[in-house]
Length: 479
Image 1 (cartoon, rainbow, N blue to C red):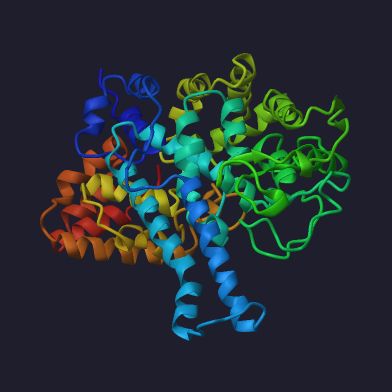
Image 2: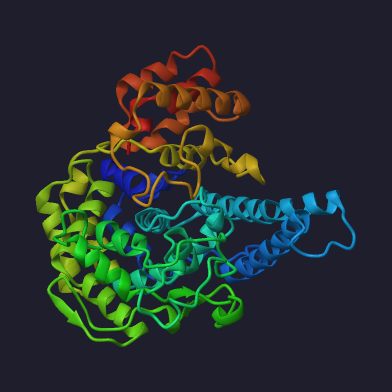
């Protein structure tokens, strides 16, 4: 028997919004349709025009060196055989001219994948983990590689184990640069007394030399244990020493080594010695010391509880039922963090299907569901990502390492709602009468479509107004 309520939940809550025909297609077995998405290859985003992070960083280093040389010539620090203000200004502008188009291309490819995908639950999971392990293009060092971070660290591992995902993320250049671990130097390391303040060639100059705790703190607080996970400041400091030396190849002078733009363990920067954190001791083993800590963190009950809470909040309700959280956490621990098993536990959770429309859509959710329902082609370039900026959720740009918030209270203010309504009206005006809202409404919302909205659409003065009313309806605002 068809279950259009469950089918609507599967398409709109677990997925990115129902496309015409989707709810009807999966209504015979909504849960089975979701489980089927978890089989097969990882949801890679393959595009020959999207460069690898290593290539971007290598080119960025070259441009930074070029810019530094021009600045030195201006200051008279090096000989300037042919002063040229135009050439100097051109050199200073090359870096943003390189990075922003890469960011736009990656963001557009991401949007197109979300709108067109036949495995929307997987695409939602990619976005979930990308937000869980948040980096932001607000930091220029990440501008050209945030998309590559999602392509290289998140997508290949979204159907693997949490441990492998965690290792890939924490070693990616985007994370190392965003949280400044590439500049972290152990106070008793071989290189500590030799380093100048000139930087490493892939970061801003004149960074303070010493241990940087940013990455260690966020791994414990955000990525694994959670803020109430039982760690202390002493654990943060010890962990920061463990991962000192986790850096990026391609430096200059004494720091030369490794493949440019790729993860590289710089033993000379690593704080030597046995480290003690979270009640365990980790002997000195260089790179493997950090791997051992991450492996243990990935297996702890506190990590399972933290991740289960976030997943249940994302897929079930802002205040997730503890029974569902505990069930998902038990599966996480029983399977050593096997992510497909965890996802199946979410699909099997009765709580996920008992309250339709329990989640208020974020701006990103709202845009994806609109484009999927309306079957709109994704435009080229900045036009594709402009709606996300307009509604307040720019791609790859959360406000902090904590990522975008996932509760209605953070998104349902009157100003935000007004922006959605204005955008919906603009979209409706462009579409005109090409889409009949009365026919689209049940296909987009299934059995969650209320009689009130159905009547309002039927009484609309025009096809354009009817479409706006559909996109502005309470049911379309929620998932």
